[in-house]
Length: 373
Picture 1: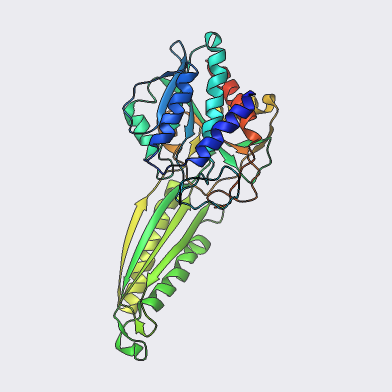
Picture 2: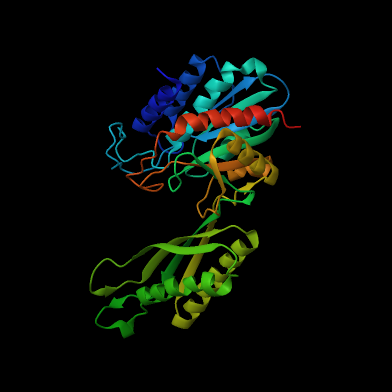
């Protein structure tokens, strides 16, 4: 079996057996087995799921990270190796990421004696619920690490394309819940109540003015209401309506201003309608800030490797890799996967042709990063 086919086979086995965040027990066992079978040493960190391994000797340590969890999505891709687990799917390509870093591990192991230090391999659980990076850091996975690198496949880019950027890359991801309390009434006698649905509708429209009227047009921001829930029958005005949504930003000052404006708008409308609106704000993953020098280094290695390189646009999605970059420098990159359907879609189907080249790239990247003073 060729090297590339081995990686594809591993990817397909992971794809057929996806597990949700924090539940990656069988995935962990598979990765441990494949690494141990290659003679790669596993580090004895205390982890419920996930694997940390290491190759090489010496004081300097470069880390490569892959994420291993899947999503609660019923697969409709139609591929022959579709998920065997009902309602769970690798719809974000973490199976691809894992096979890439497994491939890099095999290549690095083959030239272990020539490495100018150690390469630490982080197979991280629970990226999708943004808890996995903190768990690995708490366990000690970043100890003595000089720099860390990771990837995400990019379905909007052709295979053979590479993109990254220095500074802000992925967004702050925050969640809000707004609970509107009015007064219920018969739908034929709305004047006897205080219509929570009308107030909630006004609230949705008003929130859209934050991005268009309260934030500098040169700053990136998205405010999206994604769920409205209220009422249970056709002829009663409900007393309660709940809205939920997300805010995406790349700047901490903008993030704080949006949070403040949501509370102000809610308070203003509640006063105008003589109702009450409770606001809850949940901070999610922070902005992913690539180190400028390591991002440029990763780009140069990609150019030399043969990728078609480009500076990435800002992403409005979130990425748990940002937590590592709070602690040590490094760079996160995008590699084209040319899927007709995007990330988190039930028919997502990345082109497996990216896997072997990406594995070779990351092995080269780690090897060359060890040589940087």
